[in-house]
Length: 328
Ligand code: GLV
Image 1: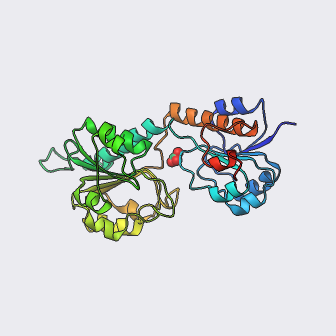
Image 2: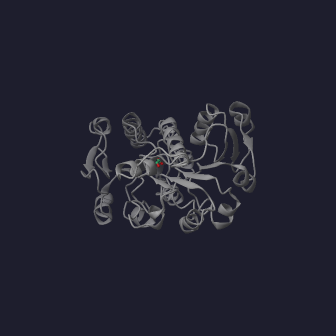
Image 3: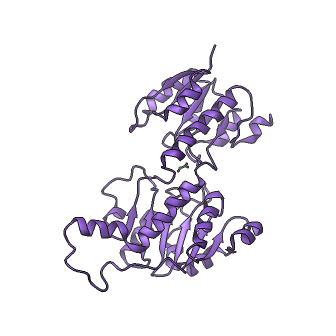
């Protein structure tokens, strides 16, 4: 009998083509609506594998309902939506989709940085709203990117890819991470800084760290107060790392210049969210990895991980290696 796999959304055809010969698939067919929790709770009961997205919360309650589950394959690099410790305790493998999205996400991060610095979306709204009366010396002036100081919080795969892009703009790059990475310092020409020093010295602060209990609200009122009044904050990692209330106050009062946000504490962000009322916020709907090629590759990789796990092989992108080592 083929293993049963629940797929929580309409995913690219390529993933289904890979899975279908080996699994009995139960696919939630919607593209723009997450699977309702009660439906997932019903379907998971006899599932051997779960193919899910970052919009699905895989917590202890769900796992309690899934006695047969052997693998959870997340089609994302981040997996803060999954209780990995609880999965590990139950010998359930958890996989993600790193590497394939690195450059695409770094592209978007840099685009967001530039858009916030140069007020791109605000300027476009201005034009479309018929407000453009004449060329004017200080109209819609922003901040220079070329030659500025960039501070990257979290120098992992995507953070490093952002640092490589910054070289082309002749930027001085600082980074802060839990561990110093001397090899990266040599290869990327970046300099380690304490968090406070990075915040005080950077013209652009880019958050590129996963959301964990340690990084929740990492950037709050105290940290924002350390930043320059001309500084731009970019978050393309996860909502929850920045305290949105404190960010709103800092932006509203002009204590920092602007913010570029691809992620929010609550997603989709409510359209009446205070941050969206500010002209100096460039906001995007969590599209960091959203190129056709990369999303297709992520879908494919998530399918490969799932098939490996179900076949008893060690998946390429196993998050909880303890399970494969038999120590789960
Ligand atoms: C997207 O945010 C991802 O984690 O892949």
